[in-house]
Amino acid sequence: MKQLMFIDDERSLLNAMARMLKPLEKQWKFIYVERAAEALELLTTVDIDVVISDLCMPGMNGQECLERVRERYPQVTRVMMTGRSEYDVYREGMTVAQYFLWKPVSPQAMSTLLQLLSNQEVALSGEDHVIDPPL
View 1 (cartoon, rainbow, N blue to C red):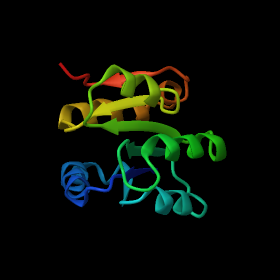
View 2: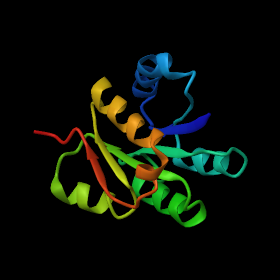
View 3: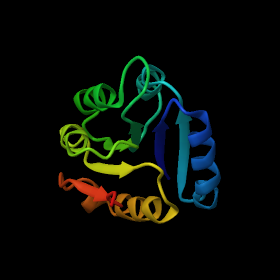
View 4: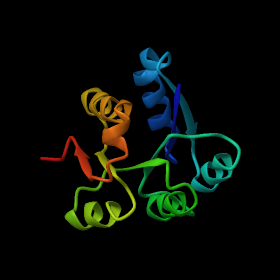
């Protein structure tokens, strides 16, 4: 079973994500954390396949967190998530992430992402993927 870690300082978003993903708990194990530092510490003891991190967080932001994940755990698939839609945010995020999600994350966008990640060849291809771009 693959393990996916969500990092977001907004507890309400993590709770909403947990409700949305409940039906998929037979295929995936989901871990929810509120701080990037906590996530990096957890990665030292738990085998995580995918990290989805919010960009804007207090303390260590998502950009820095995913950079550290890339350096320390290159096999982990990295996804940047943000509510900001500026092109510069996307461009900078894609330097450390293989996938990009915009908030609010729709069930369809999350389903598309998880289907892509279920296909190991696609997840590890090194290509950048944008899921549900903003209008």
